[in-house]
Length: 298
Image (cartoon, rainbow, N blue to C red; front, side, top):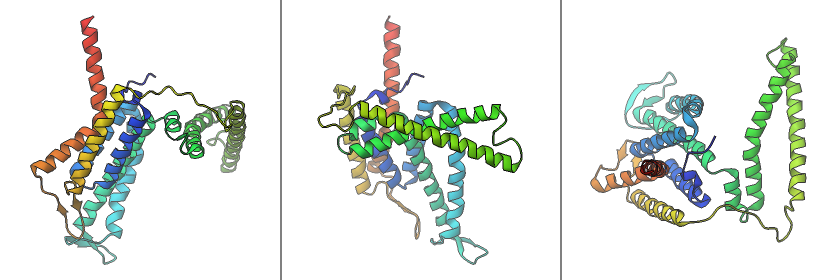
């Protein structure tokens, strides 16, 4: 499927820097306004990138984990002034611990969603391009790992289909037969992984990997639109960082709930944060409007 995301076509440095800052801000800001902004933008962008079905599947796994975080936190954290009741163990159940659990769950979900968007935009070849010369061994291992995981999952699905067609799937027979069939599938996958590793090593060796003076081809060029995007990311990121330094995103749960006032200057920081999180969507929508205007002019 052709990628309709215009932001993905920007220089890898722009993509990586954007996600780096948005993830740092997402993990640092505990203010509910900032968390809602970041989560809403991450969900919207993830749906835009991978359609609703993929985002819905991911949320089916994330939401139970977030719910578990909300439930577990008050059971172990008993800080806070507002005591609602007492647990059977005798420890107090406080409003602050419940709200902190909700905040921690929101942060978990938004970080996972942003990482999902990151994996769609910053592909392995972009990562190798950015860090291949700085940390060549680590960048190669990471890119090969990221490439290997979906390839392994696809191969596993094919092997399971083949085994099922001859009645040797993990759902066939007694418990002992299922264990034996599972071990067979595991053995097949291990053999395939080793063969794939040997083929990859031979391929890299034949291409001269590791030789002194070896050059690398790159299709990425830092053009004018990348310059404007870099200026926007740096200026907007700096403005948000200044807002964080001034306490605009300040929010604490313990021992009591305290937060920054909703002054006009703080609201401007929230708007800047919203615009920053929406940067890929704004770029994509602007590109769509440009194409529509060009089509209508034909």
